[in-house]
Image (cartoon, rainbow, N blue to C red; front, side):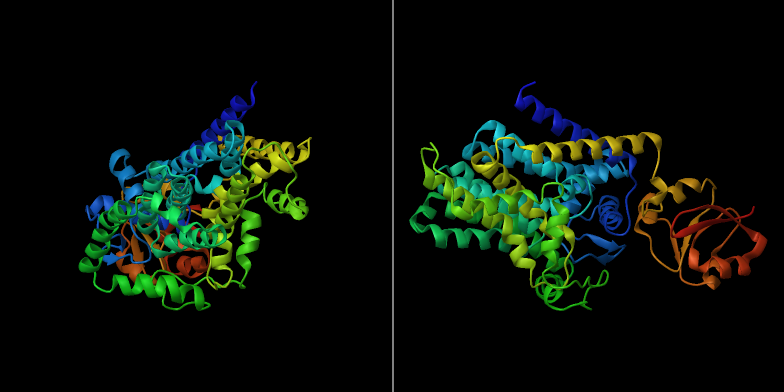
Length: 469
């Protein structure tokens, strides 16, 4: 089997396993189910301008690109987890295609293929391939932007147009942070490289018009539809969230405070099993690159520096941040993978046993996930109320006591009733109705309703009770 064919089979295996998980694994609370439910509401209401956190309540935390992708899948294929995840999968595949095309301009086909395989098999990227959230669409935008700029700088205007398209995608996926993640390493690279006149090789005027046409109309429409959006999103989500530990201005949850610098540990975890590779190779570079037969050593060096700045951009940007998530490292993963493979080819050991070990780990994990899925194991451990919704086979209504479950909302098409108190339950509950009761409240619930209800199913968080007919 040739190396190219082995890489292709590896990618197909990862894709099959991930697609199977998209079908088999229910939407998980709180993050994925929340975004999927927002997309479901968009498809249901037909309001494609303002994502809704609840009916009539705007969701100002993120721009709508990822919601559009999920809502489009739901509109075409129905209200299923796979439909909600499909647009995210397509974003990931587009990211990998751009990475491969770009890598082909920097190196050979096999090295480019290995870089794509490393990206796809990195822990965080593999999970995010089919996980309803914002960061994969952001990664698509940043990757397109960075690849397009580097190619456009070499004089290929097609890549230059991709640079501006990537900016537009990023601004619609996650807002100004996408531009910062791209322009920060680009500016640093140009300061190191010089030759600023080469920027004229980019379609500056046409590209700027393209970004304006694609981005500005939605931002204006969003502000007109729900005044106050721009202030909350620009100031709150992009400044206060990251500088204020436990930021209390979040309208849709609570701030996630971590020690500053935690983003570096997140990167190590997110890029397993490959995370030891890049630091190892950089250590081997401490004495400089060996002399090789490469025709243009300066071009190679420029590519290494550019990819390193690209890979480090999320880590540098979020090092002083107080509220971060592990997914914030995702935009830099493709660059780290490509840089690692290119350096390995240049200075790695003749017997790449460490790479073989990493591939073996990926295959073992993929096989294990497949076996677990086929046997139906582990489903009850997933943080989702989908199994409870499936267990409710009555003709009555379904309610939830004292809280909110986005997965319950999605799987009931928004019909689950939110009941704040036991008195509300008593007023609402009718024969055949079901109630999701938090386990810490099951004693008081059972005491209040006694033999009038019976437990039907449970998961880690809730018990499903049904009122007798």
